[in-house]
View 1: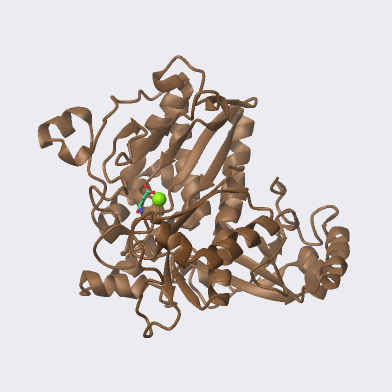
View 2: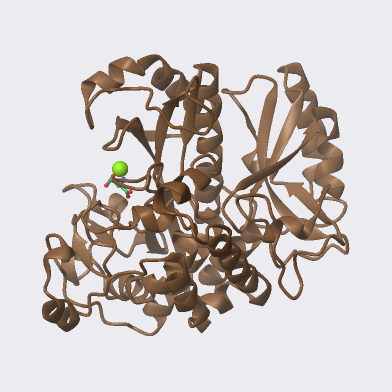
Length: 467
Ligand code: GLU
Ligand code: MG
């Protein structure tokens, strides 16, 4: 369970004692340093580290880091908003001890996600983890709704010895092929072992479609823990790969053409421990609330893409008929629908039924993406939004008239279009708060500017190793 309290100067109740005991225990286990990780607005994982002996001090007083990273771009240049992007000021990074994990793939290190607060002890309005935690807490208080979420991870495994900046797949086997599992079996086995040691329940690991591509799916958790887990699993995938002389890319599009790396989000809403997506009188067992929650997400997908597909490279992936879900349609087990309704197998529905949102990639800050998806879904739920008709098959085959009649829209085809949709969506901007919403817009515009004039291959190359 994720710590629900915001951090405070001096430490959350009990945290300093816990951190003191933990640091002794960690030192005995040979852990020398703690990685304090968070994800910036552009979707890049950033860290500070402290020696293990400083864990109690970090839990009490945080660790300094500039707020300027809220407006960093993936290429490490900096943009500005009215309140962010200045070289002035400092923030404190507070580790969430509940989520601290000894890194099996990086001997000598442990990792913890952080919350960021100001030197005055106020939550930093740019802290995406805090915003998600509050969104979840508010949903529970106001609507009696809780959530389960899981983020799928697709990544491309490349040869470590490839020429600088290039991607050369580390396996030559076919999509989903047994060959790939054999060729990279040692790596995959070490990865499974590392995840197990770190307490991550992996559901599956399989060779995927694109060159050198693999996928991991994990069990569902509360949204903040699911986002933390996504960051941790990627750190582990990369660390274990490095020990095998391999490189990994989580970029939405490793190359300009072809199937990309997705980061599909599974999400379900629950009331009093009961899954709203199963056992109801609506379509495929959805309750009326689950139908409206689904409708809320569907209606806002064009604006959501500014958060779920935040990189110029995201739009190389978001192409029709590549399983990325680029039309605003839903369908049961429809792999081309932006929202796939998953009912679960007979006997498992009450536990397993959920929504899978596909136009999400791993350039997305997972805390931002989940905050916005939940806000959109709740907006649908509270306004009893009607869920449109289901669309089966590939929506790309619908003629313009039929698509219009069904309300099926193509999602933005560029980051600029997505930013304009997001700018026009008051509900999503309100869900993030003005500081973070402005940061999202400024960072996206900065990314657009950073690749202006580049052809698609160069755009793919620019982001290939950033996420
Ligand atoms: N690689 C696809 C994507 O970019 C997803 C493939 C799948 O359905 O697992 O979203
Ligand atoms: Mg996949």
